[in-house]
Length: 275
Image (cartoon, rainbow, N blue to C red; front, side, top):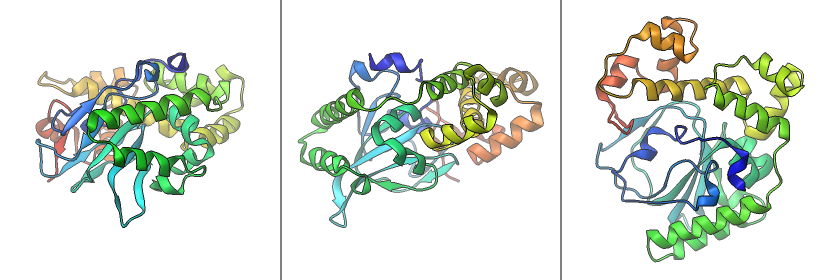
């Protein structure tokens, strides 16, 4: 089973992926549970805001354009480890992939996704170009969802599995919501600290410390998203921050706004209108 590789990951998607303001959502194949986060997102329309800000997140976005740009660009792959602004999104079909799913799909190329946006047409093997052609030829979003299901299930079923120690390290980060010290993770999997950092970055495109920080931040967003009163000192301790000041510094860097500003302006889905 593909899903046996990863625990529940439903809370990892970027905030705007859960927004129902997009044109249409379709459901990934059941075999992709734990590898694809949330629904597939189709179209461009966003009824919450004309432009919006999305906090940083640990997942990898696979975006396939419905029509090529400049006759060549059919889509791209990117991880956003910093907050980013969306102003004029293309008409596209998008999937939110876990870091391990991205490695299985794209191999060593997954290591590039944190530092640059990689065009599907530049990925080796030609599969990115073919996926773009199939999505472009589909008659509607239901067909596009079926094309993406077929592509992902086929690719992931035959892909080379990540090193078991990397899978274990990822699970420990996820299961502890980023609170487990990296040195303890290295000891748990039987690797040195430096070896874990090097191999983790090769597989997942970022260091375990950065990944743990993003997972911890996503857990924090889920804790504070809502009308309830937030006791920041308690939330900081429960989320693994050293103190409230640490939480506020991290939050501003990863969301682009203060926690209070975020709570005042974010929609239930997590979308936040641009200032």
